[in-house]
Length: 102
Image (tube, rainbow, N blue to C red; front, side, top):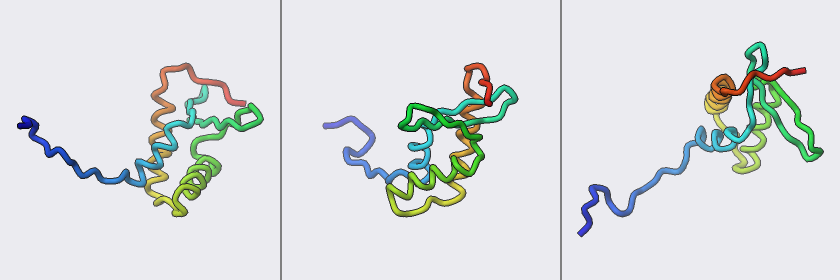
C-alpha cells in the first residue's frame, strides 16, 4: 500500500500563455549597459549579434512572431509586457559587469 498523500495520477494543467512566452524568452541573452539600460542580444546565422534595448519594438515583435509560428495565435499583451519586465529584471540582476553598447 502506498504511503503517499497524493494520488498516483495527477492532472496537470497545460502551461499558461505567460509560461510559454517565458520558456522562449528566458533563452534570450540579456545584459545591462554601463548606464543601467537593459539590452537583449540576438544571434543570427551570419555569426554576428544584434543588440536591441529590451523595450525596442524588435524584441516584442520577435517574441510575438515566434509565438505566432508555434500556435497561430497572438499572446495577450499583458503576458508580453510581463515577460519583457521579467527580462529587464534578469538583466539588472546579472552579476556580470555592465557592458558598453555602441
